Image (cartoon, protein in one colour):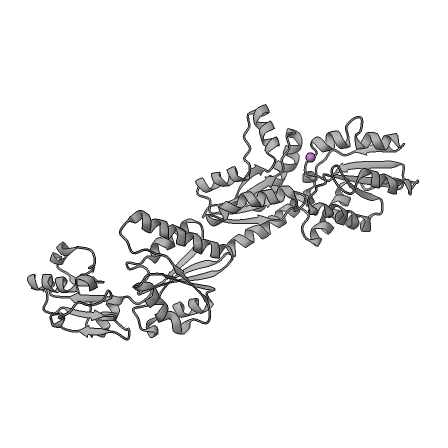
Length: 487
Ligand code: CO
């Protein structure tokens, strides 16, 4: 499991404020989460381009950073936004993350102002950190402003600030509230003669230097023209330790959400008798949100029938697993199944995937299990009673004793040469070619002492303690035990 935190900022092309705000926030995250690799991405394409052209330095946008993490094998990514609010840039980031959610575990930390407690924390932090307005002085914070409805965040923050200190105002460069509105309020308070201006933005970049503190038309110039004495603080919010700590707190929630994801269980349901399921399998099934079964005429539906007595209304999903020999077709189906499962795990679902017998013995499930593990999710196998153990038990015989080796052969594949191995032999899934198998065993003198069970433990079970007595073909779930090879 490789874990990364992707710190996503709007960006700035001013290297000094970049270092003191964005890089400082990234360092706070790295210190708070020492086991997580911290990476950088910007949401502003213009700023990325500008830095690339000017300094030859490449900064990733969100998709690039995620592609890079995926290629390097990262499976868990907590994305921490350093945006001030849940506005356009934040939503752009969410959209760019979307395609990666199917292939990696991704969770997103909230921007600075999200819950009510964030506004209170930011109001307290700013009033402690900035020089508090003295008698006859006002503090005016410059926000960016946005056509997005998240713009309402500015007045909510101003309201909280005002509850703490009556001479604090928030205005924005591009939205509401405006500097004109602040000036009208200041006109009603003639005792205020001094104004401190500070950015309400993560960085003290272009807007702070030019629109706020610059020359003609800047807020400073406009306020000075009205006779105020103006002081400008060129510090972005990212320089405030309490603000950085708040980002780390938001990131902690994102990190916690990652490890609280769902889990996949590969559940062996045994050979057929529901009483042969393990107590653990039954418990996991009862606790599962979703039960998955391979959608094949042979194993899948049978596994579902066996587990049915223990199901209590869980959602049942059939997974398409084609029974063909073309590996690309099969692999594509398993990939799709893994996607389907990971999407459920992402939503925190517990998924039980049923397998006839035991998942580690010739099952489709293990291919999917490996793919889900590789995508960074937790997956666990619950063993089941295998068909050959159940068949031996049904026949009142041992599979192997003392120094006898045991050989398990998938009889549906042509492995005739294995018959010469001196071992007790189990031929699984012998259905299709059962009479040929009988013939071949007879030719090698192995038929004596061979036994056969069809559909072991199921209602349509047939038992042949003497395999040579079988005269007609049998079904897919036929199993032959031949012990003639060991003297
Ligand atoms: Co702007």
